[in-house]
Amino acid sequence: MRSQLAATVILGIVLPVVSASMGWADAIVVRGRRVPSPVRFEVAGEEVYAPLLDVLGYLDAEWEPEAEAIRITTANGREVLVYRERPEATRDGVLRELPGVPREVKGRILVPAKAVASAMGCSARWEGDSRTLYVYPWIRQFDFQELNDRYRLTIGAEGPISYGTGELSGPPRLYLDLLEIDLSQIPSEFAVEKSYLRSVRIHQHSLAPAPEGETVRVVVEFARTREYRIRESEDRCTLEIEFPLPHAEGLPPDVPPVILTDLAFERTSPRVAAVKLSVFGTPYCTSATMYEPTIIGIDIANAQNQIRQPPPEISDPLVEQVVLGPAPDRPGTQRVAIAVKEPTGHAIVVDEGEVRLLVGRFELAELKVVIDPGHGGHDTGAIGRSGLQEKDLNLDIALRVYRQLKAMGVDVVLTRPDANPVRPWARGNREQQKAELLTRCRIANDRDADLFVSVHANARHSNPMEYRGTETYYRSPGSLPFARVMQAEVLGVLRLPDGGVIRHPKSIIVLSYTEMPSVLVEVGYLSHPADEVVLLTEEARERAAQGIVSGIRRYVERGGLLEKLARRERERARASQEVSAD
Image (cartoon, rainbow, N blue to C red):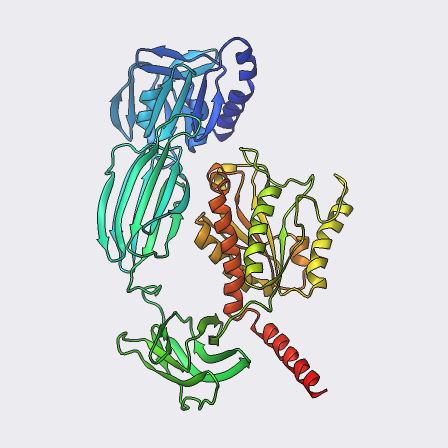
């Protein structure tokens, strides 16, 4: 059946070259794709008879002929029967009247498009001047729930949902733009008044059928900004947007206990001290800072203290005292209270068997970073439907990263500062291409860089609508912690779907021949129209750059380079003392 449908769609793309030369250009637009028709549509009153079956694949629907009817299965499993000999259809067994029966013209089946689309859960609008039929799935579900540990907003549609996200100026507001979709009949606004949530609104953002199509905008207004995550159902017909409850603190239900077995204190560098907790189990940590006096508090949820020795005595220029005991306001939680002599920064680093509480000033001025804008020159990389070339997008984001890091005092270098490749290479010459990629690695290795970030955008030529979102690739196991932090930070600001942290299946050169933690960030998919719409905006590129910079900063703050930077600092201090002695 799928091969039959694929063949039908291909015919719908190829044959119109002949049809157009005969004086018409009837077409169906579905999910942003314009599919010309090999036959002329028939208009009867308010109804339009069109080869709707030819484009069902773009709605992730299927059809198959039966003796008395045409059976359509929608993306979310609904069954629609369109009868051949009587003007009727059923949706999940419920009878509907149609204005007429299907017609066959030159081997194509023309159905009453508006009525059949409605039975499938879609709107179909006819634009007579351009002889174009626009088909959009309906939104049917818009629910808000308060669960044990989170709020959940659920949006369900009759077809696959493509979306983009962002933040609005003024009061903290998150928006989701649902592309190529129709609002149907659901509430347009309801008040939430749940803790930090204020309201949720949904409305038809764009009513123009072309060129931008139908867009539905969902706006969530906060009293203060909160984290959220978006999950898609397997059939992509449902979105769940979840917000943690204020008291949940990220703790899953029924989490097994965490055993604390040891506590130690050490000065790791002239600027950073560490409190180390040995743990058995998976810890869930939160932190807060109190002033007058300044105390950094770290809570470990559902923890049991089995430390036998007394807390370490401390004589430190910054840390006065470390106390461990039950949190009085949170049963089952152990609290580490670190009293410091002056306000300072802190970070939590969770590794297997250990929690490190880093206290001090996390300055990046000593950091060496190489930013690699992927592709360049005649190597364009992916190309979106708008004509956006990946090489230009990569360079734009990389230059923004460069400027932000430079302003922070970071020693940062670009492998290519302009549109040209790092070194010239001839098309089709794989050895020259490999040499160009190795040059990017050599730039980082020769500078003894601490971190390497390659900036890219992704593409899929087969089934492009199935792949979208932000992904971070790594190769060596030592780069995995960096990749995890980078993915979380870019995802948090760019707000595209989460494609995950992936060990690249191939020995990709820029990840395999660099001698420091290295990642390749795919900010989004240019082959997916929803991602491309986002990445075309200057705001999204700036946010992508901010996410990459934040990923670098957070990785350093969480101790990812602590040993290397501390060693470099000690060597510099020792060299300075030797000069003074001379």
